[in-house]
Length: 340
Image (cartoon, rainbow, N blue to C red; front, side, top):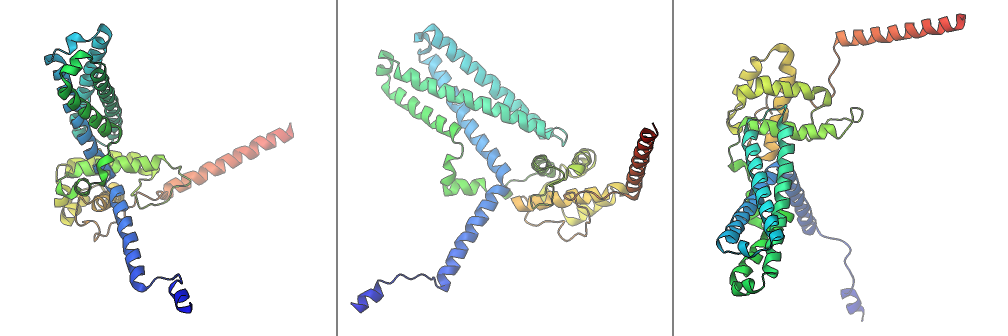
């Protein structure tokens, strides 16, 4: 009995090997989540391309099927008009989306957020129309009557394609569990990105973070957030100096010597800002995997655009003068009131 009781005792501790295994698993999960978060822009871009491409192919095939199979001529007037309106709306939204996407390659810091918002709106509209078209395809197959019975094999294929398109539009990340697909999504280093693309991507994400917090609560963060005081100046620097100088170069080919050459040509009053922007852009590029090594890491740059900028002596003297003037004016107004 005593031996059985000893065997049934529960062990409440773990040994060193189990501790190491648990710590490694937690570390791997943290690295995976960090990698996904760092590459969220790349993941979103690739998922959008895949899902919208599937939507376009399905819509074109179904439109051709309606016309060449003779099914459209058998529809009632209301269904026929609905089908024409949906197909026309989808074609219009998809064309506008394609035009905006092509024009976005020439985006600058001052209008990159407008392009992103326009793309988001027309992506949403295109997906909504695609969902409605998929539902219409399923509905027409179900209520097809004798025509559907005569073409049951084709109708089964249409239903399957409609359901697949619905899933891809409603849940664009549903296939994230497949290992190969996830590895492909998380491999931005295989693509050669130009400096302009990476810099504008960083500027857009960092500006969004600045909008979410007030100046009083702003603190330096690991997300390379641009302080509100610098945001307009950073956008102006990108458009007028940094993108014209380095924009067309591939980001992974830019060496420390090339960065120093650019900084040496920047006016003295803009060097602090230029150094801070370069540090943040390349830190973001290294975090996302656009570059294997941060070329600014070993450079003695003092620029920092995450912290609140320091006031110059002139600005401080001007502020003291304003305070003294206000206090003198208050005393004068108070004294005049007491005399009356």
